[in-house]
Length: 256
Image 1: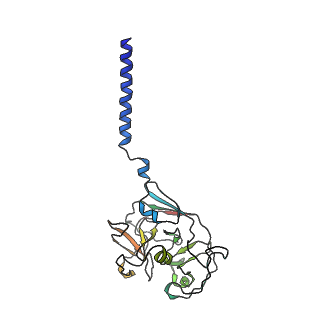
Image 2: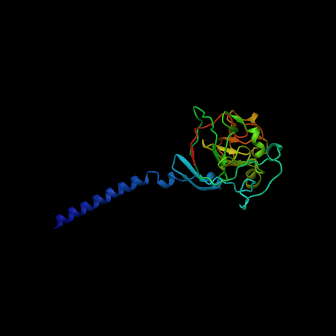
Image 3: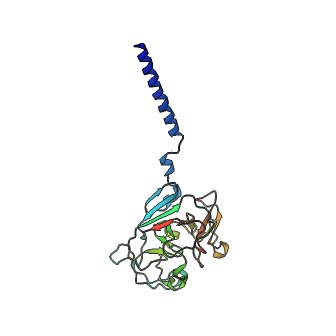
C-alpha cells in the first residue's frame, strides 16, 4: 500500500513540475494583448470606425465622409451648407457636379514605418487618411500628372471636394482640421507608408514651404507626438501641397 502511495505521490509531483514549466514558458513570451496594442497617437484619428493593430500593420476603417459642413452634401443632409465665397489660393468657389457619398475605407499602414529602398509613386485616389477619416489625395487632378490648378476652384470652404463616385478628399490643407479641430502645426493624419502628415506650420509658428522640404515633401525632427523624432510630411500653400515624388516609406494598402 505504501508503495502505491509513493508511486502516486511521485506522479502528482511530476505533473505539478511540468505544469510549472509550461506556465513559466508562457509568462516569458509576449502576450497577444501586447502585440495588438494600438499606439496612443492613433487615437487622434477621431473619424475612424475602428483601429486595430496586428503587430505589423495598423488597420484603420472609416466611412470617408467629412464631419464639417459642405456644399457637396445633399441638401437634405444636416451638414449641407450653400457656399459662394473663396477657397484655397483665393479662388472663387465653383461647385463641381459631384455629391458626397458614404465610403467603406480600410487603410493598412505599417506600425513601424521605415525609409524605402525604392520610393513608389503615389497613385490617384486615396494615399492616406486624415484625422476625421477623410481620404488624402496627391497633387494631381487626373492621369498623366494632370495639374491640380484646374480644379482648385472646386474645393469647398474647408478645401475638400468629392470625385465622381462621391469620395470626398483633401489634396491641400484640410482647413477644418487646421483651424477648428487642431492647429496649423498639428497632426493631420497619416500616409499609407505610416509616416505622419502635419499642417503648414512648425510648432514654433514658422510657415513651412516646399523649398524647405525634401523631394517627398517632408523632413525629420521631433514633434509633440513623436518626441524622439520621425520623418513626416507637411501641407504647404505651394505645390505639391502635401506629397512630392512618391512615398518616403513603403506603403501599405487601402481597400474600399
